Length: 618
Image (cartoon, rainbow, N blue to C red):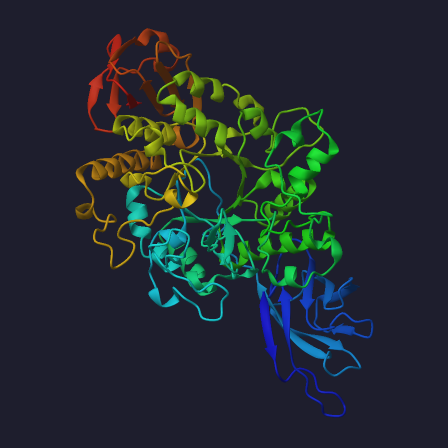
């Protein structure tokens, strides 16, 4: 949101000077975009009354239509920006007999970056390794922004798991070198967009929206995180280090303190019901050929929670608003990809429309959607797939929950990994799926595997060598643990050392225990290996039917072969390598990637208990 505090706006013949607070979205735009269309939403007292007229005079910019809606506090202006238009400033002049409404609004066109697709907006691929951060819980780089007076929630208490703790964007920027050393190439932050929300009541507890999923102004980065300037600095610094940034999108809902919820542009801006209706949180009605219409409607139009109003994306103004913001943020900050929250709760046609619009403007941009589903068929349904269905999604990839559950189970039952991956034929390109072991909504995976370090290493090795785009959750590299009991806050604890007053600093080797350093170094070794491994980054996957708790798979290209052997048993297992001759071929030596040891390939190979051996064949 751009708040224009205009004091010398428009002078009538009588010399009267008017003033009012105006919201303009998008706040500015660019010349050189592929789509010439732009819809500007203006919000101000009575600005859309019947007596208002609008004039724009700027070479290459045409005002095609003035749209008045139910609420006279809004105007929607349809503009066309010619390819010949130049960057610069122009005025949106709104005339009205009432001097309190008449106003001149300055607007600016910038030149689209010539570095898109070169040094920014690069997209994220299976060559990358994503680090997911909840900024409020990671590191406090600027204590001066912990509390912003005038915002609805000014509580700040690190001892309260439901309060803001002060982590911010500068804290992330300060630790980019730590992440790069770990082998991370891409940083994904949970939402940093403004959440100027009053505290909510959940489960009888007063809570802050520190998590970021209750937007109150899409065009403003939350000032408690450092604002737009800090975010631009993070993206630019990351790019200068050869790293990438993924932004977390929320299309489905906003916070109930959002300015356009407080003053709805029109009655159907939100999905509204005769009485409050919550979503069922069920995806099945959307792909079930026998589903009822009401079940489908409850899934997509039901509200996520009472304080997260559900946006009606079938309304063309809502759809346009969301699409333009996504394009705006991509160009404004130069981010490399989007992770879309609560993906299947959105209108299906809208989802395809926004994906198309983004990729049209930014061909290298990556988009993957959060689809918390149980099996690959459901996951594939919501992405670009090979399934013969009426609705065809164009989403590049999903957050691959089916593979997550299989990998976590796979440290005990390798059959599930094999079976899950055997269904990859459902996806057009499963390499574009984001794969992970945990995140901000799941139990910490070190706890899930019973704090068994051998199983931890197995899971990490699997994550970093199988197909897809791997993502690790902040602190997993130092064995942060906990279950979501009694709340999500338990898996969102502060990173030790992110605050100056912390007694230990686990960003540094000396602050970590011996076991934590072993974990960090193991992740680092495999992550940095995959940076130079063509087979892992873009090679094919070949897997073999598991045999007696041992699962063997290969990643390979014409020039490199990596062999992975996962022994889920509690005792050593010996395998006959002749079974794998199709891929081993004439290779005679192997390098253990974790240790650097090179050894001869004998007719048999013995693998220690609860271990995944990653070998580069020579």
